[in-house]
Each structure stands twice: as structure tokens, then as C-alpha cells.
Image 1: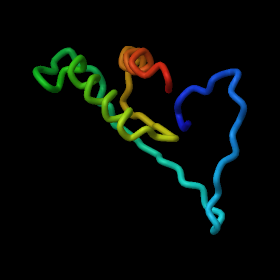
Image 2: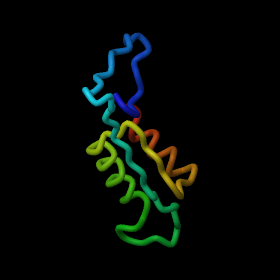
Image 3: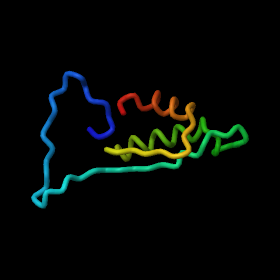
Image 4: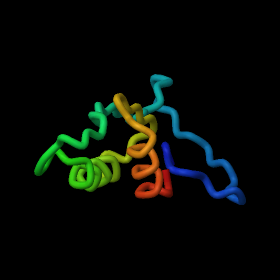
Length: 84
């Protein structure tokens, strides 16, 4: 389930632990690069947000960190990834 929002009515499920006691976790961190009105072409945030969303969905991380995120960028990602 990872970073994805859990259903309120969902019953917690057991986590499979390997014989050596380790639990596998997928972590990702992104330097989103702040939104800049001077950015042109593929560096413009409206184009980068689409790629960022596709990548986050493909990786499907359990833990996700982001750097240089502005409020507007966070809002765009939050709206584009409602299940996270």
C-alpha cells in the first residue's frame, strides 16, 4: 500500500517478513526543482508535473521525499496523485 491512502474501512493486513527479519521498503526522493516563471519548453512546470506523476506512479514508493517543492507544485502533485 505504501504512500497510497488507506481506505478507512480497510482492515490492516499482516506484513510479510522475510526469514532474515527484514521488510522490503521502496523509498524515493526527488528534487522537484522549484517552479520558475523563467523556465521555457520542457523545463516549465506544467510539462514537468506530468512526467513527475508518471514516474511516481511507476515507482509506487512506500516512502516519498521531495525537495525544492513550492506550495503550488505540492498542490498540483496532491491533486494528480489523490490515492497517495
